[in-house]
Image (cartoon, rainbow, N blue to C red; front, side, top):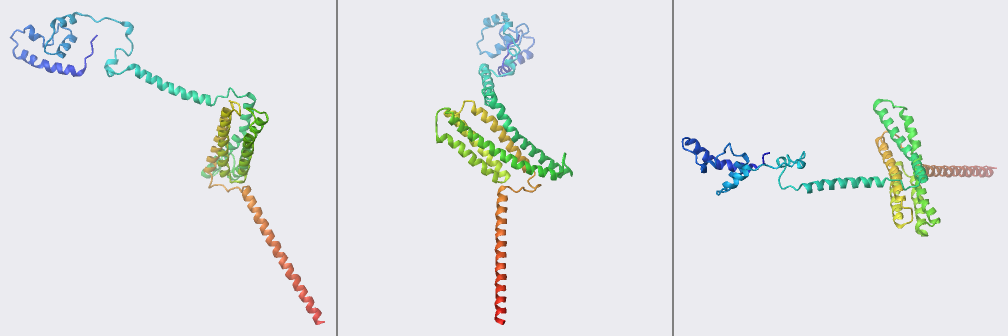
Amino acid sequence: MIRPVAAGPLSRALQLARPSIRASIKRPTRPVTPRRSRLALTSFKPFTTSLQRYQTADHIDIKHEKQVGKEHLEKHPEEVSTDSSMHPVLTEHGVDEDAEKEKDIDMLASLKHDLRVVRDTFNLSAVPKEALTIGLAGVLPYMATSLSTVYLAYDINHAEAHGSGLLMDPKTAEVLLHIIEPLQIGYGAVIISFLGAIHWGLEWAKYGGSHGYRRYAYGVVAPAVAWPTTLLPIETALISQFLAFTFLYYADAKSVVRGWTPPWYTTYRFVLTFVVGASIVATLIGRGEIADKINRLPGPADRVKALRDSQAQSLAEEEKAMRERRIAEEEEEDEDEEEEDEE
């Protein structure tokens, strides 16, 4: 094996060797003394010994060099690996390999920790089977209305671009879309109200102690926020319900910390809220793609306004009819009086 030597010392050694080599070329007949032979690259000396000679100072220990030249490298096959022989050539000296390996290990540990956190976040093993089954079944209608909205929006866009929809014409898709809208909003209001009512049941069961009005407030605020959303336009109602679901999840997480709800309730609520929130976002995206291609369905607030306008119009017509009747009666009375005066 050849011991590796840095490029810098090798170049300096060659520079030191040039004068003696030139001198030997100019005076080939002059016998070369042993002292001058030290500065030349001899064939009978090991290459490693010659390079080491050029790296030394002016005082050279010849005996030590001879001893080194006669020595043989010891073999250690157990220490040889795929990286051991190439590392000094391809990498820098002075690099702490152990520190680099520890750094890589630390990076993998951080990644594994993040994956573990995600897995624990969605781990539902502690949730009772009945609650998990019914809870997941409860979000299916919300997912169904959301996916239906996305598909109908795609069908309407397809008809706009190609002249016909995939499964139905644009008018039919728009009618179905207007039927789905109140269903999703109404079902969302029901879910929000139910999430508040759970705390009433926990209070009656005295889970985590009795907390009175503070726990009952959950069941009062939830429906008070949920049901007014049914009177709002579809986009505003969906955004309001999204915020309501998020706020209730935060409140339920605080309840777990306080000991008002079971420890698994946070994970259970997070998964269900994640599904509902994703459904709301999908619905908003689908409706945003066709906002300028469909007629806006009048909501409950529009219907109430229309009812008030119709009542006001009916009242104005009744008053007008009453005024006309009174005028007609007064005219008849005047005519009767004139006839009496003539007689």
